[in-house]
Image 1 (cartoon, one colour):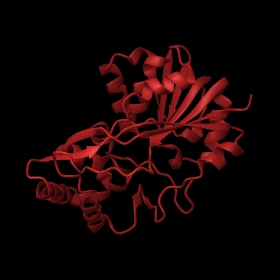
Image 2 (cartoon, one colour; image 1 turned 90 degrees about the vertical axis):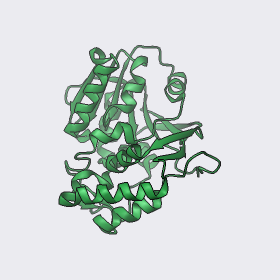
Image 3 (cartoon, one colour; image 1 turned 60 degrees about the horizontal axis):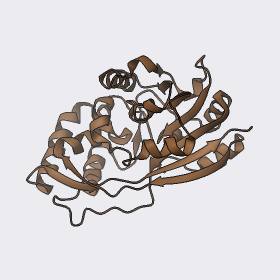
Amino acid sequence: MVEGWEWDDTLFLGAAPYYRRGRLPYAPGFAERLAEVLGLDGRGRLIDVGCGPGTLALGLAGFFDGVVGVDPDRGMIAEAERQAATVGVAARTRWVRARAEELPAGLGTFTAATFGQSFHWMDRDLVAARVRDMLRPGGALVHVSDLMTERLSADGLPYPAVPSAAIGDLTRRYLGPVRRAGRGVLPYGTPGGEAAILTRAGFTGPRRYVVPGGQALERTRDDITAWVFSLSASAPHLFGERLGAFTSDLGRLLREHSASGRFSERQPSTEIFIWHPPA
């Protein structure tokens, strides 16, 4: 947990309807690559901790008998349930509204546990220990994120780049200079150091894999607006009565940067770290 910051249930309040459209997908072939390195064969169980609207869990559902997604946000769980029904996997997925710190809560044991850019929001020592005890022998804890060290450019692509810096400036005009997170702030951002925490919990590893991105993507104004509102730092509730004004200003900014309403960016690579519990 971040020193001086406490989780609360408004962290992603109102963000769920924007998440699937706004967030970029994992790199093409990610699920297949993970299945290959873990030797998945359609059996076993997956738990996705901090599952959000089910993006990661649903992408992996075909490689397991059963999938459990856990998230404390009511809207995220509702979105995951709807999407599971849409893609036809509702019968083998279960969505649990709970904090990761409340595991295991009778959920059973699992072949794999995934964290898709969610671990930093948790009491990581506590969650690592609980997930360790829920993994079957030979199981794996999988940490998945965009490859943060790469620098992607929209140069040579058909539309203007997403004006991320200008969007950040606009957001700070409304919400202040310090990053917001639920009812608190994160002046120094979210923590790193996952390796030390997982090692302390008895995990061995990691094995690291990168699924390459770089593919050209086309995004609309509505996509970019959804991305802004999918972020904890600019979740809709943070704007209060000024939400309408911010939305109007954001639309104006995006029109100024692209008269066509279209933007180009590149698909991030996906970084995978695989850890194993003690034998």
